[in-house]
Amino acid sequence: MSKNFLTPAETAQSFLKSSDYKIKMPVSKVLVSGFLAGAYIAFAAQLMTTVTHDMAGHFGFGFSAFIGGSVFGIALVLVLVAGSDLFTGSCLHSIGWLNGNFTTKMVLNNWTLVYIGNFIGSLFLVWMMYTSDIWGGHASQIGAQAVAIAYKKTHLTFWEAFARGMGCNWFVCLAVFIVAAGQDTTGKILGAWFPVMAFIASGFEHCVANMFIIPAGLVAAQDPSIVNAVMSNHPGFELNTLNMYSFLVKNLIPVTLGNIVSGAILVGGVYWFLYVKDSALDPKTEKSTKTETVTA
Image (cartoon, rainbow, N blue to C red; front, side):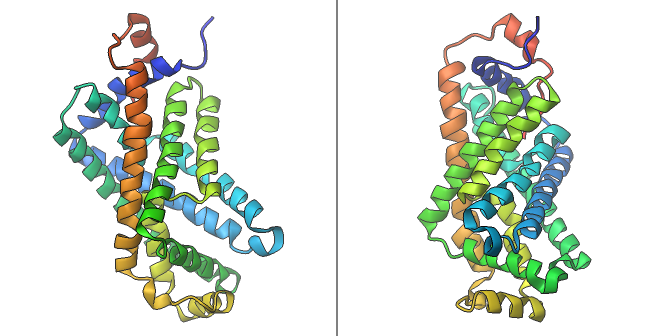
């Protein structure tokens, strides 16, 4: 009787195959696949913003955070089940790198292309949301929530952003690992949803999500009606401090570094050490994982 999941050892070994496939993809395909992942994450971030924009006042912060994480869970379902390349999941290429399957240059080249593709996809969704005027909904309160989230994210210290980035990608890469272990669609969806819900509800930081969330806040803050709504809800905000410098330097850079450390080391490095280092690929394992060629 066949099982519907891979063991941790089999799953770790499967990343040697999937990473080899991803690393050797043509540049054009990596960029397009990265574009899709950026757009998918942005769709989820916008959904979270819309659903939770007025929840905290009615149900409290904790339950609102849980619902936000619950709806954001669609992000990794789209990325991992529908298929695309997400920078945070690509940190798991460290398994193949540590195993000597490819060079540092090959990994960094892949990460750079995926990161660029993710950024383009995220900004494309910013344009879509701006053009759709969804931010003007509910008397501009949806746009005000977009600005408020972006503002809070750009007012973290370096180490706060870095540590929150670590927490996020620890969960995300575990989601990728669980999805790779699942051998049926239901298992993959559940495996993607739970860790993502947990990282959002916990308040951790995801660099690709922030590629949409903070530019969305920057653009929405150009609308006077949205600014008025923000200031009525958060009179202490100094919106002039929400700018490209605070986006890139105070959030995106430290969050990206934190994402890399946890994804490449705490998940990729640890699972390589536990299940790949000094172990030969068993023929049965190879057979059971030969079709597992798609990761985030």
